Image (tube, rainbow, N blue to C red; front, side):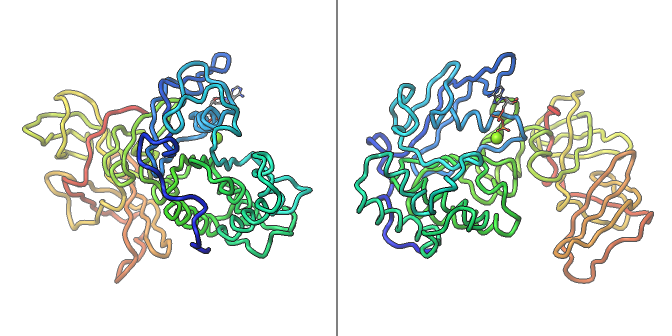
Length: 373
Ligand code: ADP
Ligand code: MG
């Protein structure tokens, strides 16, 4: 990748004409009896990388299509650069778009595909060619301009699509699962390259993925979607460390969810009844007598010599696997399945199947979560 002269000057301050901001106000999309997007309020600030993360069918693509102008809104409004865009066709919204379904033209070379975006915008041929070359160079395809899409790998085709989205100096980028078709290593490489490009251009990005690792690694802010609604948003580490419900905790990585009832609470600590797993203590609020789930990430569960009065469990090893960098142990304890993850450094080895073990966790690593599964 080169980081030569940027295609676009850095983002302008908020309120100026092309700051790259995207704002959705009470945006709704109904298809028949399906509410695909349910009164969504969302802002992408200038230069920000915001990711919509949610399972299949949660309304991510529909949201992107409405921002891009390929779908009408049932109600609400979209503003780009602070201006309502409801009457603007897609090409006049000045957004660079890479959608999974937004394929390259097979009969055109990579360069012609990139130039096409400029031809639509009536840029003259000589300038078109030069800007297409620059855009291909930026995505690491400087020498591949003459190739047709079928002469390029999947990853290279996605780069051409990215070059096509960048070449006309868009205000912002919309990327809908752009790496979904790539294998893991290529996907990680593209993730880093997209971040590099985004930083060097200072461009705002609205990104879509259903892959939590991808969302964690790329985003300034993650917006978790479910059934057309936002269930939580925040910095990746905050959403991961402080999910608002058991559903979010489960969706953002592996976690142990232990059903519980709050027995008593003082200032900011709740004592919870974990049923067969005994008693837990959680630094969190909760209402006495109410049902919740205590969430403990597998990396925060540790083997201990014996059960303790609180925050521990005894059980039996169901499986124990060396995954290379980590060990993953599955346990059956008090009628529940638990997962423990350890770094495989040092003397640690897989445990014997059916071995009796005890695990414990620190109070501060446990979260009391509202049930919403
Ligand atoms: P995601 O991208 O998060 O997987 P989508 O936005 O594609 O979700 O879909 C959200 C919901 O809207 C789903 O229930 C889907 O079946 C429905 N949907 C999407 N597009 C259409 C359409 N053109 N006609 C009818 N229903 C649609
Ligand atoms: Mg989708």
